[in-house]
Length: 365
Ligand code: 5CU
Image 1 (cartoon, rainbow, N blue to C red):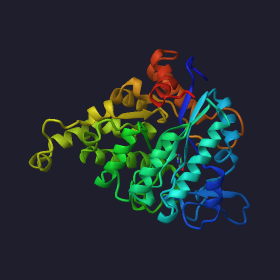
Image 2: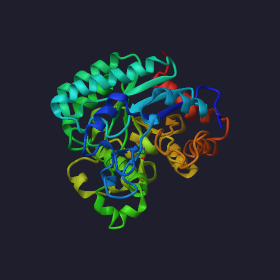
Image 3: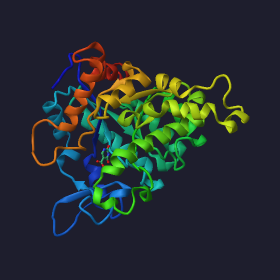
Image 4: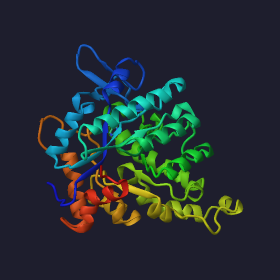
């Protein structure tokens, strides 16, 4: 079901370019791709919680993970005009520091070249060489600004290894602000495996994906707020995956805990000039609409504003189980949530389905 008259834009859609797949096939610890005999099919194992002896060890990996032609086919089936593609997790977080600069350069060039094959239909978020250190990262930010199809960067929650409230990240955030490159913040690490309990292997990927991912994002951004990142880099723009995890729902509670914290008060951190959680949500944050329900989407809209919501699919993840071809239920659910929350065919639904992304990410060649 395509509701949109302006271009329909998917801002949350991943690829593992062919060179990254080759790298994964050469590895034996996560992230890796291998077969598990007696089966001969390749499986992609990326999540810390899924590297276990069970049927949930990774997922089958086919061309939908690495072929740009498959991405275009998926877009055509779902009426998507433009996709802003990004390397999927865990990006280059695991790369040896000495190799990080070159790995980022070659992956970003490869992704930009894939976009060039379909001008006007594909743009991208670049990947930073995080393990390479601040100088190398700064160089890649400058280079990304010059690549024709790059419109921001995708980032996990670990930053330089200490999380996104690390003061050493401030110059990097400043460089991204100056380059007007928004951060697409995406989870990967979830919560410690111990919280899933002894029966975790019986529950497939549900707990880490449904709860670990959103809480990871919520914690990462809350730490940034507490560290004053959005006062220090006031124009920093972030697009949060999965409608901000649980941030829209918990914003009031987080804000109240801040306001009632004696330590923060004693440290002088509650004074004039502080951006509240609500201020940050409305001025620094955009939210994707990958939340699969009208209830969650309404919270996102109320927290950040309807002009800050952007449609996404999370392709190639969450494919239909069993039947091949046709539309994906996971994608249709997100269309329906937008229609339900904003009104089928309304101006604000059009914005969420594409207009907001075109405006914010400048999606014109
Ligand atoms: O299904 C999954 O594991 C994932 C993942 O790893 N990354 C993502 O973006 N969505 C789903």
